[in-house]
Length: 121
Image (cartoon, rainbow, N blue to C red):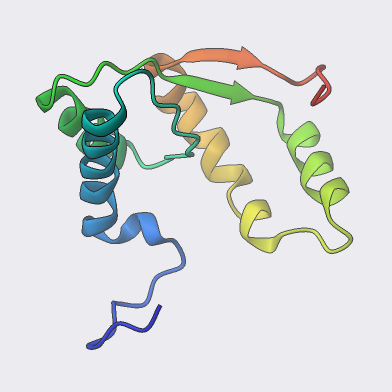
């Protein structure tokens, strides 16, 4: 999308403050329109970003059930390399940030489902 003036350069759109606000606003509006349960598959590895999103959802009384689909580093690397003929450099560069988030805060904030020994099926 061409936006003028341009958005600040970033390697991840989650670094743009409007993105985090739009996650909350989009969830709120979709739920207001449809009701029911909304499933949002999203990886947030920066704790302040998660706090901003989860606090925003709570302010709109949107209940959150937070899951982390975990796999060890070797399994993740193998899955990333095996899914594409050319492995995704974007996804590979988040292996260590995921491991750090998992060690420091992420697993304490969520229900962790260890998928290391599971197949997609």
